[in-house]
Length: 375
Image: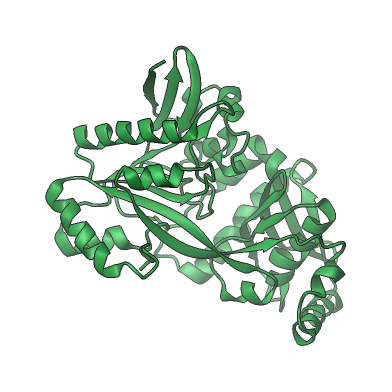
């Protein structure tokens, strides 16, 4: 049976149960509630260059797949291409950034996939979706379509994207993998003696300063945590990014997490004498844990490592979680049990002359692996 397509201007145009039924093997950030928090909080606006264009795929009257997508109107906050599109735009004056983007916005986590039912053929879906995206880009004079942080491991889907003219780009991030550890001490035994003693010393120093750290399920965390998380987040943002760059998120986003997404949320809370020193927020689904945001007003040595790495790893071992993604950035992760992994991204260019120029530049950047590294 032939498929038909429908475009909706927001997740609120789709029944949450229908959407989440297709999220059975997708990361939590692809679920209806998380995208609702992003869209309804006001952090995804046309002023910021985000216009929701979610593609629904029907077979007969049945919704068989959803491709969450956004029309991009300006080159602001895109992590997957490493600044490549902005570079091409500055070099040529052509708006390569104007296009369709398939990703979880403002969330640089390998998490994106097309959502489809268990009985569907992924290769077929990606093939017909790619043709439809070509139609949308051609008829709307869009310069590119891109897929950032792609995680679909179904056989053949990467080949389909390459056959359809997408170019692969790769970047690196870090993951922790549970290797059957029975306890946190078992995990520490995987380090060399000097590194193991250093981590234990960092944890002793935290404890000696009277700091206690615990993990709380989002359902059991006080409502005030969601508000306080924004205070910590914005303080940390201004410390490292300054006041000239607007923060990605706002207070409303964290409030909506508490209203809509707390069943997926965890907090790692650091306290001293009953006072909250720091918070880190995580998302969990099945055997996967994702570290997202953290913040503190206190300069406590090693507090970041304990709150964002050590305590979550301890929790993951106790809960049988198999993979912990702590978030992008930070060379210090490799010294604390995280290993490098590859994130995959894809870009397709439209317009014959513009595509030829882009591919000529990409050809010069292409490494021996046949993939284009991030700039």
